[in-house]
Length: 462
Image 1 (cartoon, rainbow, N blue to C red):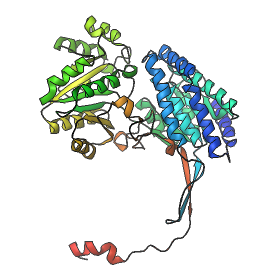
Image 2 (cartoon, rainbow, N blue to C red):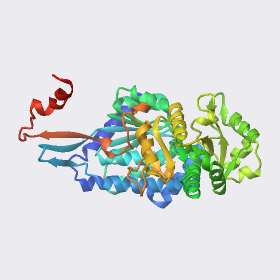
Image 3 (cartoon, rainbow, N blue to C red):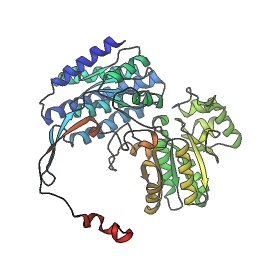
Image 4 (cartoon, rainbow, N blue to C red):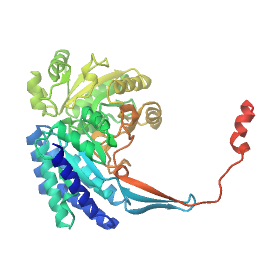
């Protein structure tokens, strides 16, 4: 098991050596080659079709959109960044910063995005003049391997060493992925929390991401139809495969009924009490999500739940809940077209529900609010342990970067130490470079004892 992967690592290092001394322009051409390999229309469609056929997750049109939009946005971000040679020179501090590669990157990728995520990570890795070896999920292997094949061809066309990107050989097994994690210089993991924990215990520097379970507040000042439309578009995109998909909405009592009506106009169906029980009994088996119903079309869900044609024709299913915790499965991440609905007395109650939902699952990831009151969004940001608080936005399209917000485009969202992660931001190019600091002397900056301790002495004495 070890020998073939050791050989891949050696080829990756040899490929990296060909980039030594390359200009920023040349490195950016390699990044662009990786982007074009998935963004090219016929490739975007082929990879989307392979992904749905191989994993059974999501749908082809949305995977095409994901393959192109995420790649285009990431390329925009990457081409604006400097990662070769001197990247900062500050005479006032006497510091000059030089970017250096981190080495061979092990990119562990999930079945939910078997083309877009490898492409995204590979682009970031090559931006730092690194090489990358993709470790796909077993179900996503064919798609990931095909992307790597297309990317290698595009790199060769532009005069680069194809071994700058490789993929583990089939069949994909835990032992092979673990060996790659051990031998690489950096591990970047998106997917199951088991994989994240294995990466952190590999002995190699690792970046992992946390689980999602996004709750969103709709308050009495919100434009209800605008909020409902955004929630719907975000929830149904790629059949809710994204960790950023809304899992619960918290509706303030004052506008609860009107908000439900708006969500129904947007294509939602509110389950009755009996229907709610069927959903719970079917969507979870032995305390775990039913894998056969994750990221499936509404027609499939309606049939599995034993519900009628009205549900099959809906865009998503709403199910009311009051409790939070292990005894209330609807309070967790669902990865399906099922949206949990909570009713809050007022904003403080809503904020408390969001806190409890994230404490139960999704700690550190994100939450959102639809409101006309900026101070409420600021209260969420100030008081909740989350990396991202989105205001009047569709989470799936905005959490991982958007053309109308300032977050970097990514498919991997760090969730901070709250989720056991080493980063509390969107994965981006900065995580794929080492920095050498050239340090020269500056005029001495030594304040007096009085300047530093004076206020403390005056208040508490010496």
